[in-house]
Image (tube, rainbow, N blue to C red):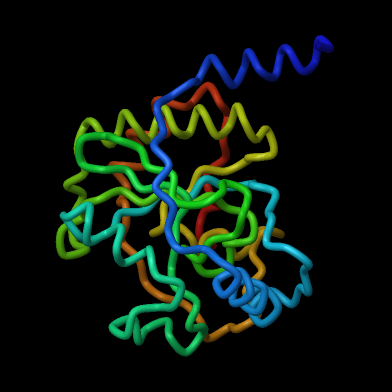
Length: 219
């Protein structure tokens, strides 16, 4: 084993955390729909849906039940109540990770595949959903979830040195001024409040040593 590989393995192992694999439905149909989404919204024709992660994007589900949160992400096609984003694509929303109220971390899909979880930034981001945010109104995420998010950010940064940013979903439009923003449809935007300023301050404080960037300030 060469020295560089040994250092990399030691770095990843130093942030070893317990992750449970609980795959959502991601077969040929969802892959095909993802490729079409990339073509339509980002102007890219791709042979596969692999990404180079540059961003860790944190969310809440606005749903207090783990099972209901998981079942919303599981199908390949978007559920009928998501009329706000249905016009953009019938591809279902997804996330790479789902963190339960007790802090248990579930991996839902390959970390380096594109999931639909944020407008404009899917092609460079790893999405982390947290069960909570009742009514999509306030930060009610638990201490266990905060600890889990911190450890997950450490793990992902160690595994993917390409990651540069940590972004809250409510901050996503601040990334429009960066080269990572790819959305071609200027009318396709939604207003988000998750996971909130306090949650992001808490996480950023604990991972300050990783030197991950915040989104640029609004002009």
